[in-house]
Image 1: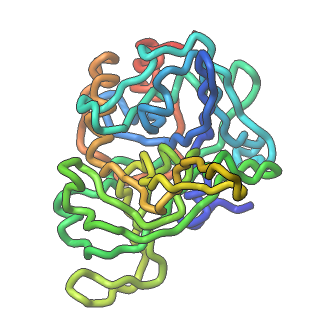
Image 2: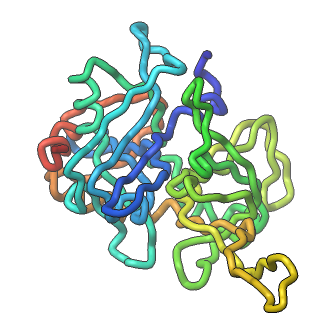
Length: 303
């Protein structure tokens, strides 16, 4: 598979995360996020707090790179991080904002010691929606998100699933007082941590109504949860009615805007002694280790 178009590259920005806790395990999504610092580009895995919280072991799965650096579809690049703890990651300071990040470089270094290198594409901070960009978007916009809904992915080629939806509340308006908005889409557990993009190819309409010829890509935020309603399920007709309650997804996903990522990675940058600088245009395939990644590696080595 040639990974050259924007659409093709979206399949390679994520990692499948499996957390193992004391009594349960779960699957989520992380994506590679890159920022420019005074010591080069720093790389992170961005996801949700609830994907990392409570895990004592974290399994990270990506697609391996072949000898020529291309994507080796079907060949995994994995790491099992035992002794995983809350010290390994940082989250948004607001407990109601479900966004978290951890340094990517230590994970890739361990993969390398195992003789495997990961193939991935980065989501650069310069792609993030800003308040100024959000103000230029319409109330209804088409979105795509990448991840592992209900743990489903192409188990032969190891690529994730891309789904499409529509904004259900305006991106620029804080949903329920949070830096978030809703999307109308088929959202399931496992999609937690998925990057949500505004992605138009060929042509798109501006808020003013004008049509622009070209491609538009913007990181809108991080998918975190889905609204559900409790419904009653009725069993067979018996003298005494048997009923059970269960949660039914409403197809409304909560997305925390991209601006929340910056506050989530800031503690990791401070811990490593790194300072943010002006973002450079996205390279699409920048790979660690830079001096910034090496500093992050020393600050949070996996055990």
